[in-house]
Image 1 (cartoon, one colour):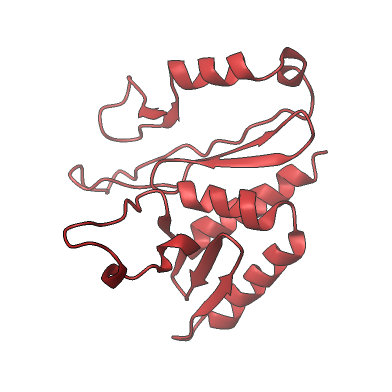
Image 2 (cartoon, helix red, strand yellow):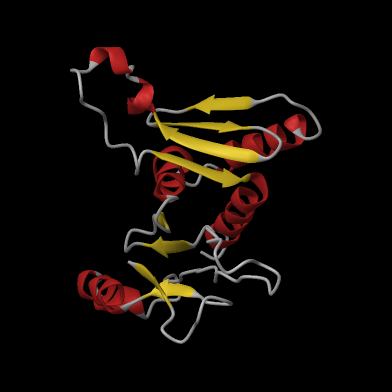
Length: 180
């Protein structure tokens, strides 16, 4: 869904939705929604510093907030961070008290080696001083319960990101909710 800009050559490229993603969005949303003041999207561009080596790929968290016709906010994240969006959609659902709890946890583990965990109905969020991990609870199944040679596809059930990046999405989510 997200593709590098055709004008970039490795540095300063931005990531944005291309053709089919935009077409899909416009085909399946009722036309009054497209022109409503409640319809908005936030996409964070990806940038690479001049000193950043060309052979190292940066993985930024791109996100988009949408409000459907019923007013429910949905979060979509870039590939590799989809689970963070699912966590917002399934666990947070506009519950700012949960976001307050997570922000307090970030402050409590800062400067220490402690970790914090919040298990939800569908997803569990772990964090330490540097990293946030969101994991689908269905991944709690151990490998011993599976047939030999089998494994679960978990690419869209587990996500890692930096605490600062995660807090940036939390703040943008709060701001989007207040735009009602």
